[in-house]
Amino acid sequence: MTSSSYQIIVRNLSQTTQYFYLFQKQAAFPLLPSPDPILSGSLGCQSVGNYATTRAQINFGLDSQIYAGALSTKQVSLSQLIALLSLNAATLSVVGSTSAFRPVTLTTDDGSPDNCTTLTLDPLGLSAPANQAGIAIGGFGINVPSYTPLPHPELYCGVVALNNNQAIILSSFVAPVPNAIMNCIPKQIFFVKMGYQPVGSTVTYDESNAACCDFTTGYATYTVTYNANGTFSATGGP
Image (cartoon, rainbow, N blue to C red; front, side, top):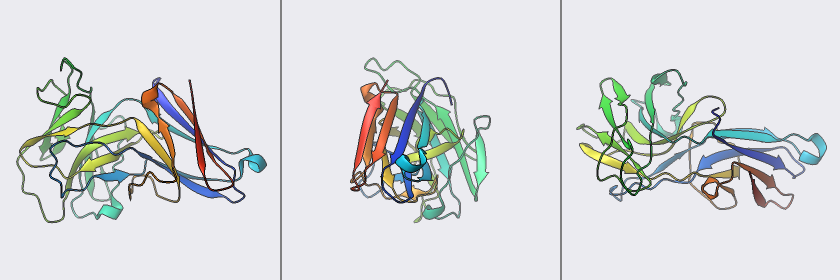
């Protein structure tokens, strides 16, 4: 992890061991054709017993840096989507997929930062970011080349998150429009929910009965408690 990171501590007050998983608030993709779904990935998953009995807790860690990412799945189904990248490599083949990522800066009011990266397909890669006009404020862009979309998409782009296992995971992503600049507006808001969702797998996006950890408020740490009555509470700290 970097010196600038988020921590989410999860404590289980129910009497049985439970699995909990972590996912990010769905990003906005302006100008995305309405039929195209926005997909979400599990950023962490761990089981833990009763806190009072075991004093055990889950520690989810996330890099606060925002990354643009791309994934070519080839023949991999959506249920198998896993986009894990080591920090010292630009691409990695996982279960027949190839992925790429780049740290990016979000567009400010004056439009000054290096807020857009260019996607190449053969081989898959993302260029060093550069300034691009017309990117939504609070977002970044990916310049997508011309390609032929298939009925079952094999190319995805969006935001990725670096977890405390030194892995980059596609977090909120779409099948991009060819020959266009994809805008993505991520939110540094994360949710903890009960259930087993392996790291990197696609999950059904559902904020209900989940703990909200909103790092846009300035907190660096959240303590999430799963109460005996099946509800969540979340408390932010420095």
